[in-house]
Image 1 (cartoon, helix red, strand yellow):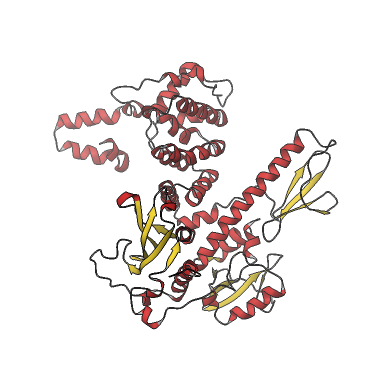
Image 2 (spheres, rainbow, N blue to C red; image 1 turned 45 degrees about the vertical axis):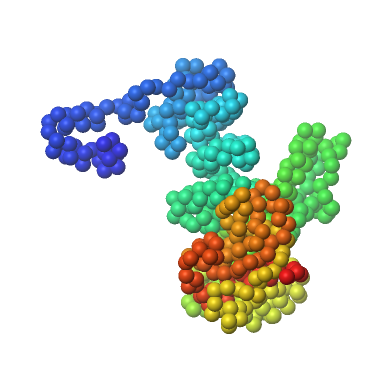
Amino acid sequence: LLLIAGLHGDAVVREAAEGYGEKAAAALAGLLAADPLERALPTVMPELPQWADPVLLPQIEVASGGALPADAVRHLLTMLALSAPGEPYPGLADAIRAVDAASAAEFAWALFEQWRAALLPAEGAWALHALGVLGDDGTVHRLTPVIRAWPGENAHHRAVEGLDVLAAIGSDAALLQLHTLAQRVRFKALKARATEKIAEVAAGLGLTGEQLSDRLVPDLGLDADGSTVVDYGSRTFTVGFDEQLRPCVRDGDGKLRKDLPKPGARDDAELAPAERKRFSALKKEVRAIGSDQVRRLEAAMVTDRSWTAREFTELFVGHPLVWHLVRRLVWLSEADGVTTAFRVADDRSFAGIGGEVFALPEEATVRLPHPLRLGEAVAAWSEVFAEYAIVQPFPQLGRRVFALTEEEAAGHRLGRFEGIKVPTGKVLGLERYGWRRGNPEDNGVERWISKRLGDDCHLVIALDGGIAVGAVDIYPEQTLETVWLDVEPSDYWHGRPHDLRFDRLDPVTASELLADLTALTEAAVS
């Protein structure tokens, strides 16, 4: 009743109650008049465990000065224990406003560590979710490695709860880590759940998962030109990144150096080592970001994603790192029925195929075209990129293209790839290109691998041998038994009619599919 009243107003519930007589109406009136903080209390209040004793935890500073007394800390801990994931006790909001956010985050992390030291009792899982209420970006960076490790410690359910905590924190740093887990974590189930969580968050913002990912690429604190100053105290260096995201270091005189030097005797003893460490971490993060963005851009080309002109200029051209990748590709503008291919010049302006300045219309849709969509212009653009010595981050202009035969287009199987033996490692390599292994069946063996091509359309490869979960070297080779289109991945002989035909695929999808299979089977012995 309280939930309905909260959603639709008291009057709706009062009107309904009147139909049940005066006693029901009076009882409801009393319920609605009760203090909301008392309404939320359970019949039996939780008892705080020994590991949550305030004596074992750091003090929480009050925003107006001083620290919370022990009794107040106990009340705060009780409110945290009363809270459910996504449903904090209503009094928490007032308490959080009264305390210093940074000290509250440190308190929450210490509480979480006490719970871990107590061997993660299930009834104390509220200590994990307290991080979602009190945590900050520092919490995000501490928690993410723990989430990554939990599946390997037989604590997958805890890792999933950790994803909920990151989503509850909701900062750009938290969402970025969610996105990273969705892309790079090695545990399949956790990766899938992180992807779902990103999609949930994106939907709440009115975005797709990919649109949210576009907005989560960190700038790492770099200036607009993609550089940062490394300060050794007695001398400074300007660090930037070239078109291939390799670091470029210049000294105070602007002279290019091979690398950032080690701190010397004249450099600040504390500042210089810290700055060199920051530089090392920066290089590692740039490599990871570059790898992720190359993969995402290549996928965008294959799936024909589009952006508004504003999204393209702000999120891609205006980004201090991503623009290095953007300027090594050919783009398409579509506005008022006019399609124009262009590239991004070194000064972030746009240029046509003849070098002429191109003004991107505000209303334009921007795409990253597959060579099949560029058609005969591929040769001319290839000459332009060769003239400027532009090395593309992935094959676009020089990409191999393939086509189905008439017989294949009219059917549902690709017989030319069937019966071929390939190393199991090459089959596993397909996962980098969006393929997914089937569910383990008898003896934990995955009997097929598939790629989603659209709604109710998958290409499936039945594997003779199969991939043994956790021991992929048991079957070092796989025979591609059957290669076919199906509405969902399963065994070929499942009894459903095979009504799908390859002629339903657009030329780019078909080409990319054949490219995957050709790379898989090249140099293989049938």
